[in-house]
Image (cartoon, rainbow, N blue to C red; front, side, top):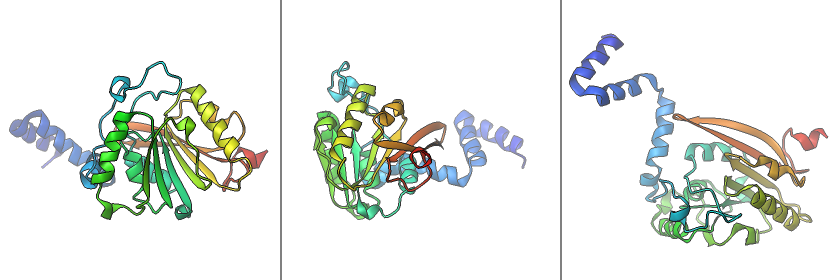
Length: 249
């Protein structure tokens, strides 16, 4: 039976919804179906609740605060896994989610064998959901069992003197981002720690580069279902493993 005949038959039997399902099954390749399924079923699989957005009111934060995040929005698990796959020897790194919200990136990262996973969140509402998730998450699915939640302003957080993978899903405005990068550069100035920074939806990537501590390795574009995601990948200047500006200068 031709596609046109199938569409006509499905429309007569099941209407618009059934026709849409047929189109989905016909034109979306198996790998893309798997990607979409992973996004939709992450919470069920992990026994957590990280879906849904939270605005300023729901987060309990002041909209005009310079350090206030724009809102909580769960990151793409597929993008997170793709970024982590760029790294090697992750068992020697702490993963730190700056603005961890309900914990989606936190629990996604904990499925990889990091030395430790830490989530920093300012909002008590989002933090309490993440803390509840930490109690219910399926521990058997975690490769890293040292998971810590910290409720505080990330600008006041003292980073552990370890090799770090930092994850940010656009948590700050430009001024707060500068403060964060200045804090990191000051704290690690005399250390030999490797630091990787993944900045998802990088509205203020220039602020990351201004003081010269980080160099930009690359910007990658990902497409998950109908959404596009940009991720800027930064490394500590002088500690870079690949081609980037500081090695060319």
